[in-house]
Length: 140
Image 1 (cartoon, one colour):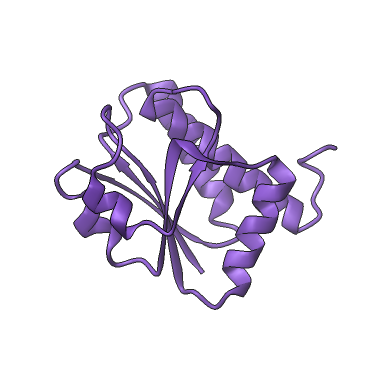
Image 2 (image 1 turned 60 degrees about the vertical axis):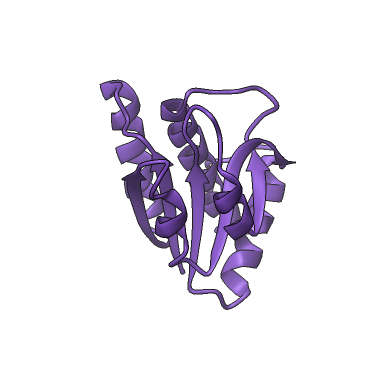
C-alpha cells in the first residue's frame, strides 16, 4: 500500500525537517511512502488521486497508539492501494477538501504548528508499523 502525507506549506525549521526525513525513511521499510507539499488552492486536486483520504484535524477522532496501529492495519488489509493523510494550512481545510475526505484524525485536542504535526504524525505512523510488526519500539 502507498501512504502519503500531503501538507499545505513547507517545513521551515531544519531540526523538524531532519525528524521528518528520519521517520519518512523508517516508514519506507514498511510501506511505499511519499511526502508532498502543496498550497491551500491545490490541496483538493492533489488528494483526489488517492483511494482514501484522512484529514489531520483537531476535531477528528482521537486514537491511542495501539488503536491507530489497528486502524493502519485495517487500511492495509482493506485492499485499497493508496491512503493520504493531509495537513491543512493555518485556517484548516476548505469545504471542498472536507467533501473528499473519508474521515479525520486528531493527534490531540490542542492545535500544533503544521511543521510539528508532520513530525508527530510520522512518528506515530512509524510507531503503528512497529506495533503491527511486534517490534520493540512501543511499550505498553
